[in-house]
Length: 445
Image 1 (cartoon, rainbow, N blue to C red):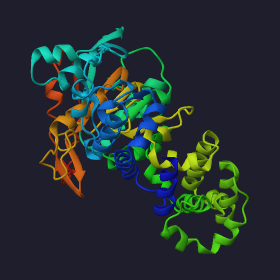
Image 2: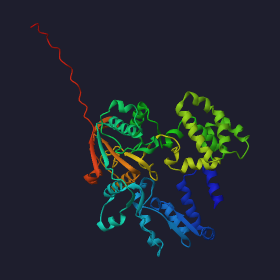
Image 3: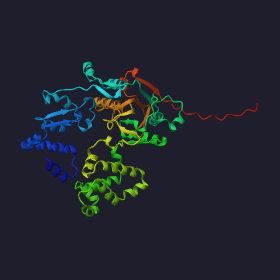
């Protein structure tokens, strides 16, 4: 089996992970002896996040686990990766696939307050009341703080409003001097650290307004977005050289860096990740370039930190290719986390802002009108809400620039499912343009 994996990787470079799943499935299906050897080797099979399985993964797990002990964990209310091919119906089919299985429902939540759980439960509820009651989750934490639903003038005002709350939560910075009289506060005497706050949004484009506002206010932040820094010139080139060194480079990699091939061939094998990155990074002069480019320097530090965690170059490449965005957050630094709602799955923060709560954004419609999968969008909103431990803010704008045009926005229909008793509503001040004073003829008497 492992030789088959290696052969595919060598022939195709970094093969798509889903292709490998189907290749394994076909290999086992056609070779009964090999299938039985694998089944004998793995008597116990454990699958986490079972609701996120796609067709290939489902078929492979079902094939391998027919004569094994299988244990799965999942929550169909958190099935949010339909765009990647996942299907929560596989979770509901488990009892049919494995007759006689035991089902254990976990209904105690150790993260969020009851107010947050009640509000998120109201959002996710659909269909039969008895079925909904069986899905209800109960809190083990005290806390009666209401959810804050904030309306703002536009995306810039939304970012500033979020910044004000964060500044008050950490003890105050520049925004306090700008607006001392505001009543937007976390509602508690507790003082928070910057790392206690997370700002969630539906699309990466929304992060720009928060980055601008936070930089202006001096609020430290980090984004859980691997695409931005992995595609950066220098980092992208360095990883291409790593793939060539490991004989996993594509044709494009080999054509682009043919001049380095003799030097790569002369390197000792194997090398640990840090040594390899230092060597190849020296060829590209990344550290020197980073002195003149702060973003490149930050990206190098990020890659260097991952290299310490994954001493094998092969492991590092696998992590960069297969792992999710949360793995790119540095949990040891005091910074506000900015990330998409999808990237936030599995994480938790004392204070969470779910921003852009407007129809067309939440639920998301690519053309501004048609929502492809309303049920999944509802589940995604539920996941975002339940990332909050103590306080939850839902914010939206009256106007937002979409595709270069400023458009009027309507509050998300999901917010209307939340009982008013669980929330407090706040509206941002409308900006009124001052009229120019007209010249007046002075009178002598």
